[in-house]
Length: 267
Length: 267
Image (tube, each protein chain N blue to C red):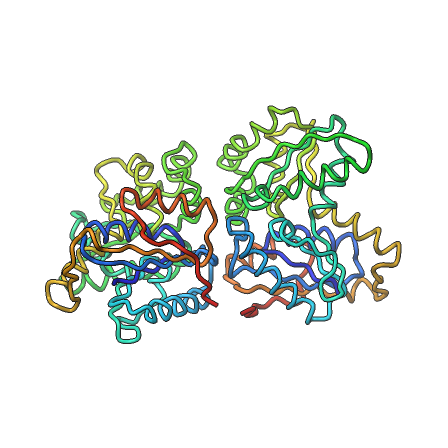
């Protein structure tokens, strides 16, 4: 069973990508919905919440911890937690963006805390240097994207307008690749691609993480489940479960099913 | 010292109204910023958080508890907590709206949880019946208003557009009074008044609460402070304090000063 952690339900975009890519793996998702959003909070608070969630998932006997939340990823530097391998979204996203870009100009969109952490530019710089390449990054905090996605305004004139305002300064820098540095942003992909035009490649965390985990399955760091696809289970937990949140969660994951979905108390 | 509680910094609009109206009173404000927003969470979670905050404020020897947060107010029915008088914003807001309306048609704007609780329509109905009047209410959840206010987009074309979408159905019902049922909404007053036109009266919680407390000061339920105005203190606590939040908080309260501002751990 692979543990997937997000501040809310946006991380289900990552869970969906993983569950489709690894159809035999069991997943345990935990959305810290009672305390979302993380992206506007201080590094100390995000770190504290992340540790609580990682400890909880470790207690559930998961074999790996996936931190789907970009904001939490930006505050967790450990590669292991309670001896479990930890996968954050930053490094895989940065590596994928570097494979995609042709002109070495990469835009990074994220929450205010993710952008302030500079986690993506640092990771891009590090990887590019190791490969003997150069890269220029242009970051933009997009704090209204999360509530727009949470409200389901995923393809709406209002979203287009806000996307235009956020993206314009980054696009003017001539980027050809844009990292969607928040699990919610893939939900707004239609709007974002419309504003960017098709010449800009959008990189989302889910796809990048699949490639990263695939590598560790192949080199034996992670053990594959061997059961039948029909028997694999996806369980979801959240620290708060309002009816709006539940129906939105099921919609994001569709056509995949959640076999169990209930709320828990973390503190 | 009067304790004022909100899920975040929006409640500072209420604190400001109270502090200006009662210039000799000391205030202790607590914003549960680590867990905001409350408005999208379930009633059980909001109730639990509210109890934790009320217990904390009671321990600080406040003489009264003001629940500035509409969402929290909708889940607290007690008139006393640990023997302290509790003031929520629902009843004062409803009573003020009934005094303002001429045609008995009142609109209520709020978070999803506040609107689903039907706290305002029930309170309006109860007060109107007691006065031998009739009232018709039209409610509208406005979930994007909080992030717009938190982002400081208080007078912006984007806010006008979103306000127009939320308010149109309510205005079409011919309301002449609109309850701003969330502490953040007074920050968007310019946009809202522009969309409503001047014939619609906007009722905010702060002003309504001042009238309510004034009554209890006059009838002796609350004891007045007798010190000099120059000596009164306003302290603010928050469960998370990011730089963005702090500067935005000071801006809301301006020209009033916060004498102490630090973060605390509630759990």
